[in-house]
Image 1 (cartoon, rainbow, N blue to C red):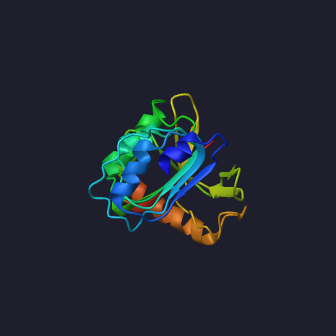
Image 2 (image 1 turned 90 degrees about the horizontal axis):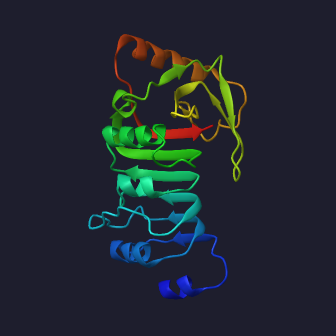
Length: 217
């Protein structure tokens, strides 16, 4: 099947991998050679302990989505796509920091415009943002509109801002909720969350998170 896909003359836009064994997933990732727009791996219940996938061997132009931890940080570095959804990962706060710092220094993921990533445990934000020169922004004074080419446009009120070495802005949306992301006006709930977060930042205490929604402008 994989060789047949590789030999097709017609364009393959999207590949959707349904639950399979970890070894079958690894076989596909190693042998598939086509350039595609999107790859979604529905792998939350795959036993992937034996997989430690390090690098993508084909090109994904638009988006990558996965629901378990069968790949390494180097694999994320090798993605040249615009959007990443990486859920239920085993990445530590230190590893997330390495990912952000690599982007910030212009080394990897230069085309990325949005990433959603979740970990299996709460990570200390100060570890994730170490040396990023990040700033917590008041949602009452700053809002940004992220234009999604596929989904609805979203508004980010405030958030945590930091920049790449060429000036490009990254924003962690600390108020991300799918039900409210299209609302242009900031809610009182979001304001109160910012005030609590601001108090923690100013007092030197460490907030934690296990989900990160980051947009790049």
